[in-house]
Image 1 (tube, one colour):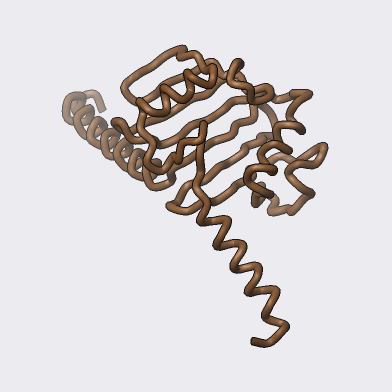
Image 2 (image 1 turned 90 degrees about the vertical axis):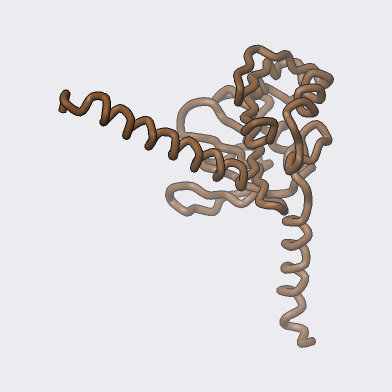
Length: 188
């Protein structure tokens, strides 16, 4: 093998290794996590269930131990995990420490913003607005979203399940529009 290819082979190896890692929450692999298991793990960690519907559980995350996390929202499709999202206040004295914790566990993310700029490290004192994404095997992602204004979020996403849920919701919305058009045909 030629020596000028060695850095690219090493980079490809580490990128493959990073993508093969599993995305976990409360030490549970999220790819096959179910609602009951996640609920027990969150409550064991100090989360307090605030509300629950057929597809969503909302927790008070202030006692989970994640710096500045105020809320943890989980979305399910039946018992299947789709998304977990922590919410953080727009300004927090502990945000830098929290970002250092994430990079210790997952490494540096890939940043995207509307301008396509590449900035400093995610665990630096200050970071720019935009989305910071870690990609894992089985189409799982971890996304830190820092909008220009408003609360920051950290989302654990099963992209396959999210896509299925989006298609299901779109189909239901289209069916409802057809039914409404038939029922209110004379009104327009």
